[in-house]
Image 1 (cartoon, one colour):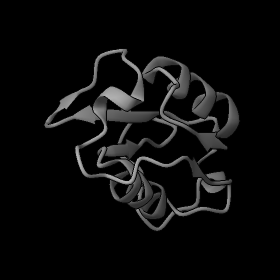
Image 2 (cartoon, helix red, strand yellow; image 1 turned 180 degrees about the vertical axis):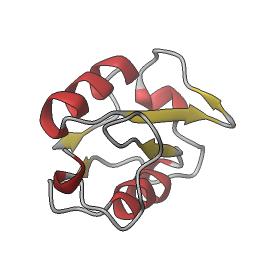
Image 3 (cartoon, one colour; image 1 turned 135 degrees about the horizontal axis):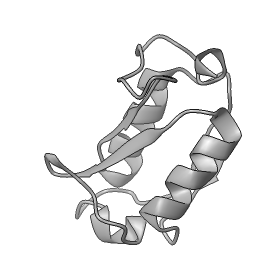
Image 4 (tube, helix red, strand yellow; image 1 turned 60 degrees about the vertical axis):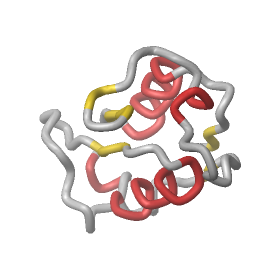
Length: 94
């Protein structure tokens, strides 16, 4: 799945759910982000590139990629909507 900064939060979350069968939370600071373009959440000084990951990617690596590339905190959910184990792969949470 490829994520670029033009995508809105809701569109990204829907695509993530379709592709992996689980949810993802996107934050602005300590609060859940509004439905805005991801670019508006990107921290100043962040690289801001696109992120690409697949089902074999571990939860912690997805969360780290968003922080490293965009300065955005995300949390991957499990099937129940709780926070997923960091060492699980996205495919294993389906």
